[in-house]
Length: 188
Image 1: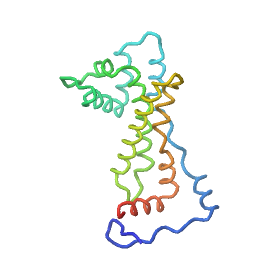
Image 2: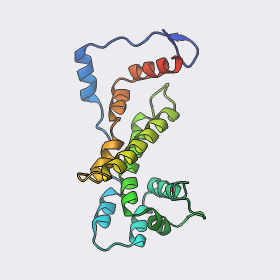
Image 3: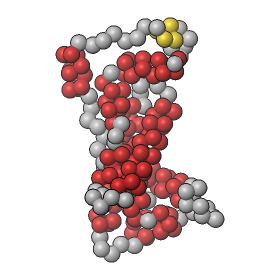
């Protein structure tokens, strides 16, 4: 037995029959797709001639992407001596490849929050930590693969980003088991 967040001992969830597992997985909503400004931005980034101003205009349509880009460019990683508030300047500093990576993950994060946000007993910090981990793995995967001659470029980054996608499915289809595991992890 584990102690739940209210301090009461809680019995672990009971194992489910295989038929119930299949039923839950079949009724699980699809994993979030990449959408938002992704299509327009992908076209623009693939164009032979593109300008930071054009890219920033597309980014401006997505508040989540805008805030993530400004947070990124103003992070310690870039070590600029001043605060960047212009999207055009941010695009210039971070570069096209990083903008593409950021645009890839932003809609996934937004959809992920929507799907999992309603789960009781699981704090927002848990999901934030999962996404921080996924983004870190994506960045490391991309960097490691760039050292090999067979790098799949964006595919490497996306593979790292979604490597833990099973947790999303698990939390969605088996919420009581997911919460039970998290409770056990807190007490161990």
